[in-house]
Length: 164
Image (cartoon, rainbow, N blue to C red; front, side, top):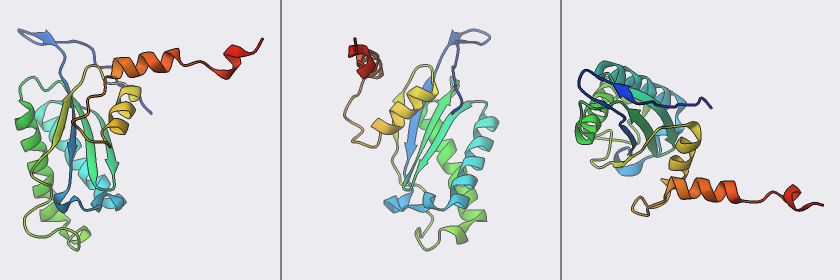
């Protein structure tokens, strides 16, 4: 997996870092992402919209019934605004151009459920992405600290450590 290390970014009047892990769920929590065509199209539309907005798509991952995104450099947008743009664009494009791929699972004018999950994050690496995706499969309100996880992982012994 590719490493994503987002460094501090210098703008005209600010220096900083902004990163967020977003999770979107299709309407009715249907498993529409089991279809590779749906996954690829949603990924393409997300990539298109993030480029348009001037934000960095650091990572994207799919489960059968939800999508994980890691977005960085969104200083000009609130998380709510960022989410509205991404969900609105992908929903409109998928329903307008590819309805036949999921019409048996979704109906009406909905593509995404109305809610979303978000967690602000620091620099994103492949390890942190895997960590957040893995731990976001559980209930989101259970706080899991990545630094504690990493420290515990580093302190775990290896069987060879105990061989004379």
